[in-house]
Length: 124
Image (cartoon, rainbow, N blue to C red; front, side, top):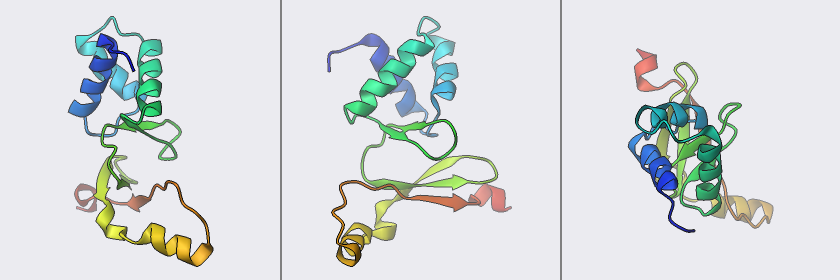
Protein backbone atom coordinates (compact mmCIF):
# COMPACT_ATOMS: atom_id res chain seq x y z
CA UNK A 1 0.00 0.00 0.00
CA UNK A 2 1.47 3.34 -1.03
CA UNK A 3 1.79 6.18 1.46
CA UNK A 4 -1.03 8.69 1.57
CA UNK A 5 -1.23 11.69 3.91
CA UNK A 6 -5.01 11.33 4.08
CA UNK A 7 -4.72 7.63 4.95
CA UNK A 8 -2.27 8.57 7.70
CA UNK A 9 -4.79 11.12 9.05
CA UNK A 10 -7.53 8.46 9.09
CA UNK A 11 -5.32 5.88 10.81
CA UNK A 12 -4.04 8.39 13.38
CA UNK A 13 -7.58 9.50 14.19
CA UNK A 14 -8.63 5.88 14.66
CA UNK A 15 -5.66 5.18 16.95
CA UNK A 16 -6.41 8.28 19.03
CA UNK A 17 -10.10 7.36 19.40
CA UNK A 18 -10.17 3.81 20.71
CA UNK A 19 -13.96 3.96 21.05
CA UNK A 20 -14.44 1.74 17.98
CA UNK A 21 -16.01 4.61 16.03
CA UNK A 22 -18.29 4.33 13.05
CA UNK A 23 -17.17 6.01 9.84
CA UNK A 24 -19.62 8.85 10.57
CA UNK A 25 -18.17 9.42 14.04
CA UNK A 26 -14.62 9.25 12.70
CA UNK A 27 -15.56 11.74 9.97
CA UNK A 28 -16.83 14.24 12.55
CA UNK A 29 -13.59 13.84 14.52
CA UNK A 30 -11.36 14.29 11.46
CA UNK A 31 -13.31 17.30 10.19
CA UNK A 32 -12.29 19.37 13.22
CA UNK A 33 -8.64 19.39 12.21
CA UNK A 34 -8.77 18.31 8.55
CA UNK A 35 -11.90 19.74 6.90
CA UNK A 36 -10.44 18.98 3.45
CA UNK A 37 -10.87 15.22 4.01
CA UNK A 38 -14.10 14.20 2.30
CA UNK A 39 -16.44 11.40 3.31
CA UNK A 40 -15.57 9.55 0.11
CA UNK A 41 -11.86 9.76 0.98
CA UNK A 42 -12.56 8.52 4.50
CA UNK A 43 -14.65 5.55 3.33
CA UNK A 44 -12.11 4.64 0.63
CA UNK A 45 -9.21 4.74 3.10
CA UNK A 46 -11.08 2.78 5.77
CA UNK A 47 -11.85 0.13 3.18
CA UNK A 48 -8.24 -0.02 1.97
CA UNK A 49 -6.86 -0.17 5.52
CA UNK A 50 -9.31 -2.95 6.45
CA UNK A 51 -8.56 -4.91 3.26
CA UNK A 52 -4.84 -4.67 4.03
CA UNK A 53 -5.41 -5.94 7.60
CA UNK A 54 -4.09 -2.71 9.14
CA UNK A 55 -7.41 -2.05 10.88
CA UNK A 56 -10.40 -4.22 11.65
CA UNK A 57 -13.88 -3.57 10.31
CA UNK A 58 -16.47 -4.74 12.83
CA UNK A 59 -19.86 -5.55 11.36
CA UNK A 60 -22.96 -6.67 13.19
CA UNK A 61 -22.71 -4.35 16.18
CA UNK A 62 -25.28 -1.93 14.78
CA UNK A 63 -26.50 -1.00 11.32
CA UNK A 64 -23.20 0.87 10.74
CA UNK A 65 -19.79 -0.77 10.77
CA UNK A 66 -17.34 0.15 13.50
CA UNK A 67 -13.58 0.34 13.05
CA UNK A 68 -10.81 -0.81 15.36
CA UNK A 69 -7.10 -0.11 15.04
CA UNK A 70 -6.35 -3.14 17.24
CA UNK A 71 -5.97 -6.10 14.89
CA UNK A 72 -4.69 -8.53 17.51
CA UNK A 73 -7.06 -11.35 18.50
CA UNK A 74 -9.60 -9.97 20.93
CA UNK A 75 -13.35 -9.84 21.42
CA UNK A 76 -15.83 -7.05 22.01
CA UNK A 77 -18.41 -6.11 24.61
CA UNK A 78 -21.25 -3.77 23.62
CA UNK A 79 -23.18 -1.96 26.29
CA UNK A 80 -26.87 -2.21 25.43
CA UNK A 81 -27.62 1.00 27.30
CA UNK A 82 -24.91 3.51 26.29
CA UNK A 83 -23.74 1.77 23.11
CA UNK A 84 -20.04 1.91 23.95
CA UNK A 85 -17.83 -0.86 22.58
CA UNK A 86 -15.09 -2.31 24.77
CA UNK A 87 -12.21 -4.67 24.00
CA UNK A 88 -12.17 -8.03 25.81
CA UNK A 89 -9.00 -10.14 25.83
CA UNK A 90 -9.17 -13.40 23.96
CA UNK A 91 -8.00 -15.23 27.08
CA UNK A 92 -11.63 -15.31 28.28
CA UNK A 93 -12.27 -18.05 25.72
CA UNK A 94 -8.81 -19.47 24.98
CA UNK A 95 -9.80 -22.81 23.50
CA UNK A 96 -12.99 -21.76 21.71
CA UNK A 97 -11.61 -22.38 18.20
CA UNK A 98 -9.94 -25.70 19.06
CA UNK A 99 -13.01 -27.00 20.90
CA UNK A 100 -15.37 -25.90 18.14
CA UNK A 101 -13.25 -27.58 15.48
CA UNK A 102 -13.02 -30.79 17.54
CA UNK A 103 -16.77 -30.92 18.20
CA UNK A 104 -17.94 -29.98 14.71
CA UNK A 105 -15.20 -31.06 12.33
CA UNK A 106 -15.20 -27.55 10.86
CA UNK A 107 -11.96 -25.81 9.87
CA UNK A 108 -12.22 -22.30 11.34
CA UNK A 109 -10.25 -19.63 9.53
CA UNK A 110 -11.46 -16.64 11.56
CA UNK A 111 -13.95 -15.79 14.25
CA UNK A 112 -15.42 -12.88 16.16
CA UNK A 113 -17.10 -12.96 19.53
CA UNK A 114 -19.32 -10.13 20.74
CA UNK A 115 -20.70 -9.97 24.26
CA UNK A 116 -23.69 -7.74 25.04
CA UNK A 117 -24.95 -6.44 28.33
CA UNK A 118 -24.46 -3.48 30.66
CA UNK A 119 -21.08 -1.86 31.23
CA UNK A 120 -19.90 -0.99 34.74
CA UNK A 121 -21.02 2.65 34.43
CA UNK A 122 -24.52 1.74 33.24
CA UNK A 123 -24.98 -0.83 36.01
CA UNK A 124 -24.85 1.97 38.59
